[in-house]
Length: 90
Image (cartoon, rainbow, N blue to C red; front, side, top):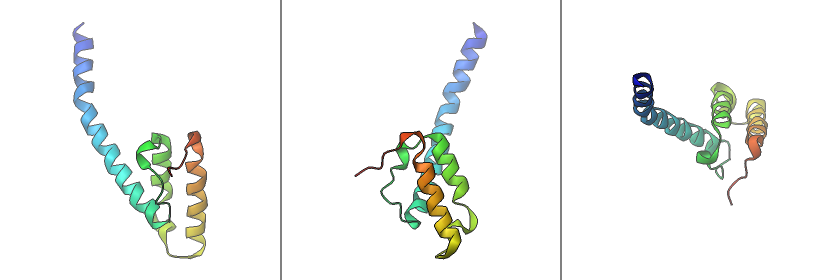
């Protein structure tokens, strides 16, 4: 009984920290998607899997202006957004 209580208390205390990390990640991904021209994407409706993949693919030279890296990043973003049945907002 005590273990269950301790586990519940630990999880309850950890939840706000996890929510704050997700909101920071959403903000970062949203800014990078805006740079690539995906301003219509509602990052709050993305799954954790999509958010993580976008974060990983939008690092480094992916945001260079013009060129192959940017085109490659745009096509990867389109593929990732298609995961899990994401529907862009109107």
